[in-house]
Amino acid sequence: MTQPAPVEALTAWSGHALGEADWLLPLPPACSRTLDGRGEETGSTGEELADLAARVARRLRNGRGFVVIRGLPVAGRADQTCAAMCRQLAASLGPVRPADPGDLITVSDNAGLGKTDLALALHTDRTPAPRPPRLLGLLCVRQAARGGETLLASGHALHNRLLTETPWALPRLYQDFHFGQGPGFDRLRPVFQRHGTDLRVHYNRRGIEQAQHEAGAPLTPDEQAALDAVDRILSGPRTVLRIPLRPGDLLWLDNTVVLHGRTAFTDPPDPYARRCLARVWAD
Image 1: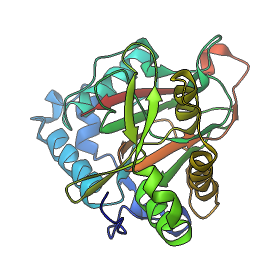
Image 2: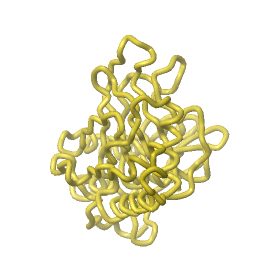
Image 3: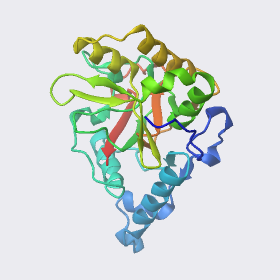
Image 4: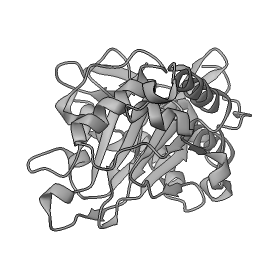
């Protein structure tokens, strides 16, 4: 393994140091009219959506690694219609992963942790494809009655902190862990991986622990200590950015750079008013 080096880029940020101007992108009115089905009335050619996609791509690549587009027209629309709108925008950024019933995220019985009202630890997404998705989009259709804030953290800042504070942990984190078992999930990958000048981050503590156990290779004390060092930094209040996504907010993030999670939440009594996010993965 080459000697780990710090990441010197805008993607290495701390949550406490960011303001809205660093990540917020209001939806241009022309894009709103196009998505609302009124583009022909106003002479829209669709170029405004292409321009928006280019701006988002620049923010993801040369900015903080994430951006929130505010103002998508979700009011009065069915959940599936909102999900289709999300996928329409995703198609301008890269090949979109096939739609899945799980792409509408609401609380449901007998579901995985992502579909409960519990807190969700910071992680990167992993899917049953040959590799994790490069981009993740989350469109807020409805908020929770209380809680449910989105949590974000920079994987590059995490790497830099480990290099400074616990450099002994990095060599193991550059080596493979089991990240899943079962159909489509049996694969190995490191937490940190260099691709040319880019540093890619893959982390899911719960997934690693389960997969290592199922593979008959439970974590050693040294491996647990290395992952504990990661979690210690991710749990720091200065590391994490909290964003209470509003209805019509579309979060885009580079899933190989930015970790995401959420706080616990309480839904309204009305089952049709439950917190709902539309998710899309793109490459």
